Image (cartoon, rainbow, N blue to C red; front, side, top):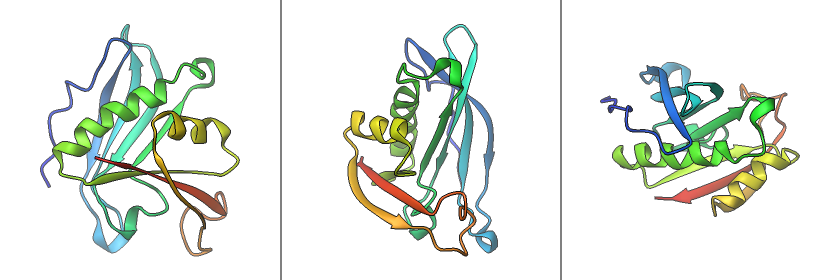
Length: 146
């Protein structure tokens, strides 16, 4: 797997600071991914995000993109800005789409997906054998075509 330079993942409000990359671990059903801190332009860390490089069943429940914003910085659409930056990286990897999943009761994440014009695909039951269960028993799946 070739991981690309990520120093250009920034805009006028935030930048993504690479924490690490992980190679695929097929026996654990893990796909290659990037993990980032989301930082304000002044360097203040305000959250995290990640990009999983895969368009298979392995990303159905966890999605390609995950994010979280520290409580004091919520409400400014920083996660949407981070997703837009991650989409640039996903395109470099040749992904045809990215999935974002969230709990049906996570109003903020559902609104971010709507703000990004992501297509609502479905609400799914998470299988009891999946590592995301029991924290997540149902997930909304959104898709953004690239």
